[in-house]
Length: 464
Ligand code: ADP
Ligand code: G6P
Image (tube, rainbow, N blue to C red; front, side, top):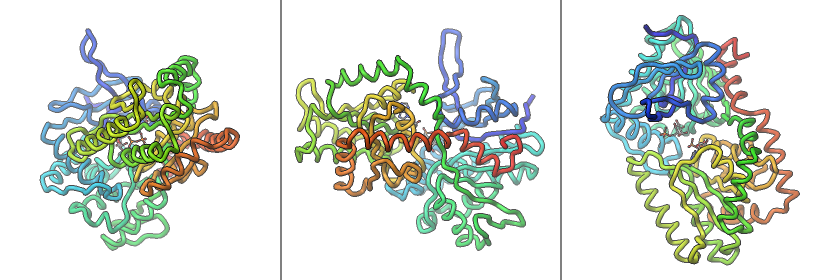
């Protein structure tokens, strides 16, 4: 029997990881701010999360975990390739990130995107109780709001885009453009990370569909669709707690010792994604070593690059380029037992990441374009010792809130090098002042604040 919920989240991924134990398959809640933020609302409403459980073929049966109902949606191997790797991550992802890589357009990918979006919409329609609230997440599911409204006009529908929303000129490239826009307009509230993105959206509605808008509200078929900015955040209290844990602190010391107790540890932590500016960051570090402005072993860099979307060509090409650059730097500037760059193409636990954050002097967050960038926020929240300096790209959504970081334009190599040096050499009083201001902001703008702001605006009474 299908359990029907008054609050439903729809996202490409379910917030769980599969673990194989001697007793068989089990599910564990995956770490991450989104699930933490939505967990209380979901638990309070006997909520359901609709999403893909990973893997291909038949989906597991719906199950309960820690007070949330999880409703898996199946993807075939072909759909994984066309909907997820293709349309989502080789068309929409690069296009929405300023086309920093050339978006690829394929008819069969669009078709799969429609089919899979319809499947998610049907699943949401099946589990939503009368008059329920459904909150759809991110670029993989932009057709879902309209599809769901068609099936269930009684629902209150919200949509949040975690990545940037491009300016009209770029959006207009997409063959599926009108359908995507109409898809989003199926929601009552469309949320973005930044004001500029919300503006791009309302202007696009007029440009492409001739719709009228006033302020951030668009009129569609006699309905009013609101757009707005809701910058996402992290579970700040959890990050602070974890970083203060004596085990994490001890591990941070150990990491520094393992690195040879250098004066300056420069850190990068990203998914291995071409939007993150990893290559340019490595190049900036190499040039500073070549110019003699930094030297090994006094300065070392640690670059953690989480494997991501590994079958997509852009990602394969990036990996080759990044690994070639790391090899070049170590070849020129490393010594036996003392590499200049420690490159880790691996996933880590939250506590190991926290230890890395605490072990570093300069955190480099230098995306060419990023919706928000949670790593920047995690870094600041983890440094309650007020040590460390953050170099942050102006093109990350986080830069709108974290003006005390060493802001830089990652497209400008001299600017990037200058920011890195300033962050490395800043005096500790000034560094602490900057950190404290950013920490104060984060404490009042955590992920719970984000979820409440969005749900309040959507008119979910319990969120008030
Ligand atoms: P994106 O969503 O594009 O990957 P964000 O910076 O917003 O970028 O979020 C990345 C999330 O993934 C952060 O919560 C970060 O802690 C986590 N993460 C990044 N690298 C790793 C890693 N190597 N192991 C585990 N988690 C990671
Ligand atoms: C970004 C996207 C998310 C996505 C995540 C990881 O944060 O906004 O929707 O889940 O990257 O990417 P993946 O392709 O592994 O789900």
